Length: 322
Ligand code: ADP
Ligand code: MG
Image (cartoon, rainbow, N blue to C red; front, side):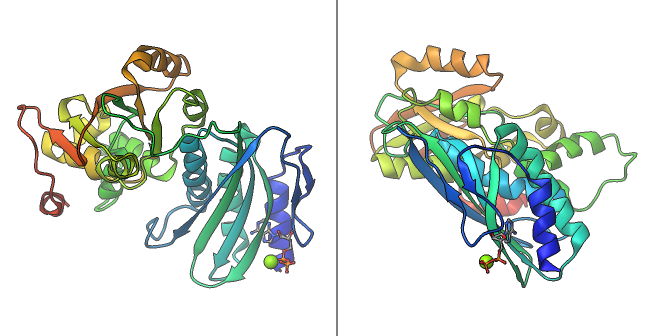
């Protein structure tokens, strides 16, 4: 039974790569790291009820489990090559595994990522994916390189995924005119797009980089701690989708953009003299990019409101909204 599930996963995710010497089916995969490349590896686990709501479609779970990991590679400026998939399933539900593998494969295929092994066990639903990618020696993007005077930028729009999660309950009727806007936000929650092309384009350009999984304030905060600097953000500059702005008032949309997790956009810093080039490079890739603030001396992230006053972004504001 388990063998058939693994065989099905293997079929659905098949991806020929010369550097996979031994893939699914033996006791371990054997992989050839290309000469002159460093290996970047990351692992993330999604637990039902914690990282995705109960009832999320299997294909969405498969996509997202890979996407959050590819986002980590993107934030390092690495190109993906291989993955491992550890599945814990309450029962051997073939249709569920099939859907999960299809969602995984749909994202893996355009990136030529090969699933080379994994593990399948019984227990509460949880999915771990480990990814492996390549980066030229010394070129990995890190959190610790931000310097005073650097510009702070983000890709895409912020707050959509958290708003999508909020919009899941209570469900709107299908004939509600806001339903399609909500669909967009829920798609952003369930099917994040890892910014891999942007990540590799930022090699040698960005001074620091992180992907936004826990919210802009939290993740930019990590960059500040690692770099020993502070950051100032302008609320008026935060890129927000038209769906977010249509469904929430200014205060709500701002809260999602600052504190909402799960967007998987990149937040990065660039020395002022390279700013225009980097913006042009990412735009050419079709990747939205917005300057939202600057790196300053000190510590922590401060946000200037649209009225020019510093905002106090405490947890109470979030809870009031949620
Ligand atoms: P072992 O007992 O040697 O670990 P398994 O029965 O766990 O063997 O796995 C058999 C093969 O199937 C291995 O190559 C393993 O990597 C692969 N495999 C198991 N589960 C998965 C999965 N969920 N996704 C991809 N490959 C898997
Ligand atoms: Mg095993």
